[in-house]
Image (cartoon, rainbow, N blue to C red; front, side, top):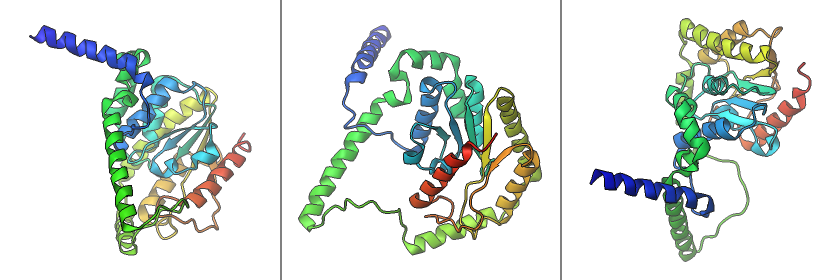
Length: 294
């Protein structure tokens, strides 16, 4: 019985392997941010050229404009994660980016060991190189989730028509209810008002330094950026402590630091993530200034 079940499962798996490349992506959706992070990491490991330019960081750097970046950079930016995870993945692949942008805000974010081990596992990498079904993008649940979303969307459209409401084609910045935003800003203010342990900061900065220095010795141009946040938050204890620790480990005279406009009051939609118009301008300035770092 077990043997028959295994044979049946193998036949179904092989069938799915051959059908997957031909399936329509109309009903296709990556279900959730964690799975999207795994997808991004796997695509870097398996599909990205060794010398491709890279940006590592958290959701803050992930907000940098994809339209402006185009194909010039690959993002290893993980919402709920940080730069250390992206750097460990680069180190584990042996790839050598020509230019590497490093978000400095989130060095206190712990390494996502589970994801790093998953994407760098030798036997998993071998399977994923040969068979798309073992990659994140090959999960059958992606089609199930996409179908359900499309179904809900169609129901909502029908409901909107019966209520006499139409859809707007105008793109707008994300907004929040003022009361919700005030509560988020209050919680963020409280979180960033904590003084991080000096030992934690030093150990994270040192590991970051080991990875960055290794890449620089092999020819990668590394550029640090402190992503702008709301002016009411940037000088709270945690951002100041992180800034101090990073500049101590990576002094401006020895490492490249990109400087956003210090006199500009950057607009965010939640305190720490730039609105699109601000992100577009910052990304354009980053790309313009890259050639100036020698």
